Amino acid sequence: MRELGAAELKAHLASTSEPPLLLDVREPWEYEQAHIDGSLLIPMRSLPARLAELDPQRETVVICHHGIRSRMVCRFLESEGFVRLINLNGGVDAWARDVDPDMATY
Image (tube, rainbow, N blue to C red):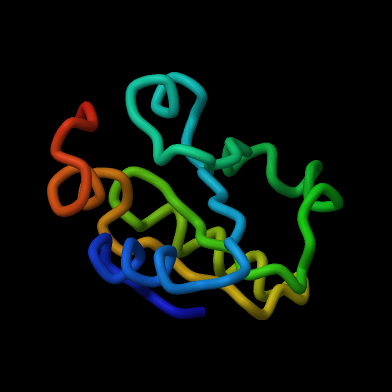
């Protein structure tokens, strides 16, 4: 698992030819408050039942509010054979602060 801060992730997204999956693992009410455009919401508690929806070979950026739940999800996904994982360190909170100041915070 790699860890990228918000600004680093923005640069990575701009430079990659194959867009990664942006996997948001927060709760629906959190996602409604603020999310990164193009992200897929699968709440952490639902992930084991929905694992088949994900491609273990695709680069996947895991996102939560501050980066703690997403780190736990990255570890779980690693145990399930996922190899191209990025944890958004600081989560959407850091994204709002460092990349998108118009994004709502909570």
